[in-house]
Length: 218
Ligand SMILES: Nc1nc2c(ncn2[C@@H]2O[C@H](COP(=O)(O)OP(=O)(O)OP(=O)(O)O)[C@@H](O)[C@H]2O)c(=O)[nH]1
Ligand SMILES: [Mg+2]
Image (cartoon, rainbow, N blue to C red; front, top):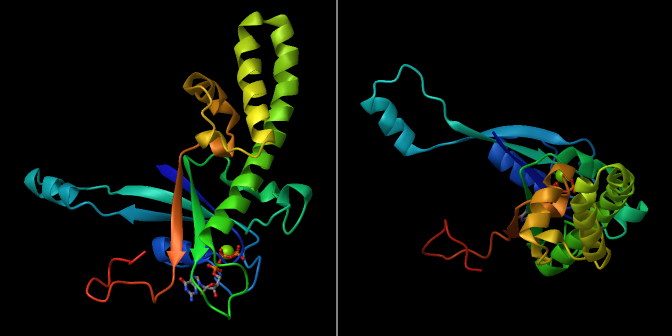
């Protein structure tokens, strides 16, 4: 089962998205840090091809694909230095297969916080890069020691050094241009910005095409 971890600023709509996908269960509220403990839920992915195949083969049992979502607390600028809830809760999505950025673009005076999605993206990318910098430096110290006894491990040291340098500049690995070979070597270290990312822009209800209510205008 594929696992997705939601990250974003407080009040971006992570828990609301979680509820829409997983059918409820998470507190969505107009104050920062409504979510403290992670919400983990599963959604079934309907696929009409599977239904047709099941009919054609008269299957006794069909098992739909499922995806798992983890909704965690909101990140704020300086989380790596302990601001807000800090960044330790990111450990809850370290083993996700992909990261979903939830970026707020809706205006609502009853929901505090910025509503510029690019500002949300800026903060989230820096905080994830700093969290990864911290992990890569810890792994680097161990890898250097291990490579003294086994020269074959030097390539891990090289990959971690390269990653740490890029992350220290605030650059997430997924758009750093780091060698694909290094990204593969770094996989077992579960760095958050070494995973595929998907951005969900949470637009307001007012930004929909009147003739296509299912499609947004921006
Ligand atoms: N107007 C409007 N309000 C929204 C929208 N999406 C979420 N909200 C509201 O914004 C508030 C915050 O939403 P949450 O889903 O709790 O946000 P969160 O990202 O989980 O926040 P934290 O858990 O604090 O990090 C709630 O009152 C939601 O009802 C939207 O698209 N439009
Ligand atoms: Mg929440």
